[in-house]
Image 1 (cartoon, rainbow, N blue to C red):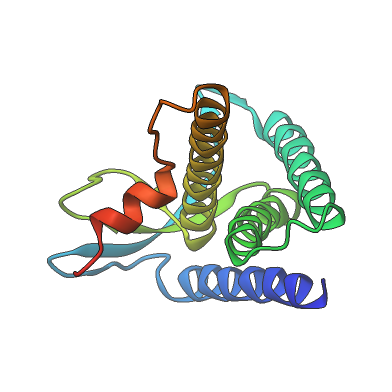
Image 2: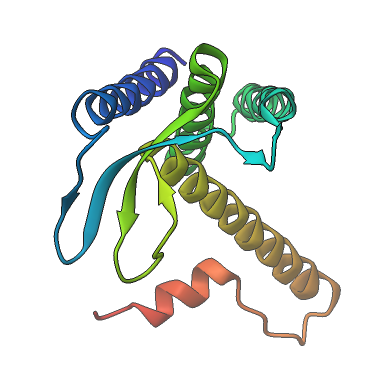
Length: 176
């Protein structure tokens, strides 16, 4: 449990450091190469004259509480895999870091833009962590659901030869 908290705090620290460096060095300048552009953007999430900052703070807080409760529930059930650890570290660390920005500054500092893939979308390390964590979480449950379904199919009908997703991936990458 201690390593989880240290990992989350380290992720928050690195993201906050990058945001500080962006605010100190990129406010009136841009660093650009073929792949990406580093610039400073204050993401207030405003539509017209209306700011939805209070709604984002409430929504983010509720989601973070749900993920923290879910993680501790998994931990209490002794579901302590590296996959769970990485997934929840990314989601909770990234979410807390962006929530800190919204509470302390009223906006989130974004600083990365990919020139050819996501042109016009500026994001930060916390955003990357959250998205990657959610993709891993969805993948984790997709594999679990298909594994449970495969197990049920083979128990219910002995003639059905069904493979779990994990077995399928092992066979797919065997010998490579």
